[in-house]
Amino acid sequence: MDSSGLYLDVTDFAHSTPAWVQSAFEFWTEYGLLVFGALFIAVWWRARGARDPRTVALAVLAPFVTALAYVASELVKSSVDEERPCRAVAGAAASLIKCPATGDWSFPSNHATIAGAAAVTLAIAVRGLVLLTLPLALLMAFSRVFVGVHYPHDVAMGLLLGASLAALAVLALAGPATRVVAAVRTGGGRTAVLITGADPAR
Image (cartoon, rainbow, N blue to C red; front, side):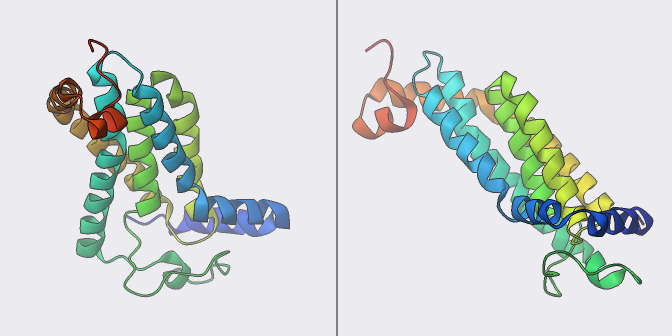
């Protein structure tokens, strides 16, 4: 894959934007994933009050499945060994943030993979969240190209990898996780109540 032409178009555009826009993208690309972390916590806390153990199971699975997608992304990175565009593309403007060290490969984008997986798992847990999580994931992916540290194909494949693995993993694990939550709730221990919420039957 070669998306260096589009990479040059995006990074040239980035350098033409006002300083405050560049700063906003730099901040988002560095810290935006924390928003998904906050959403994981909020969705889990909300799910603890639900009667249906599946609601709790989906909330608990969301960060777990996202972590699995990240591991998969790292495994692909270590086998592809694609150099970062901020070093490899001739004539490219300097990246807005520091170019990652040699050996921190480019394909696929871990940030995009995590964002894609988080967007899907959160939307499965709370359907209405798709209107928030999808734009946030797309913005995270775009920001990685905007600041100059990824090719467009890196982030596109990262989103696809994260979203597809997350959907498949939730599909496979939702049933077993729901049974585990129901069993833990029935036990009624203090830790169980903290994690899964109280059993409505009790």
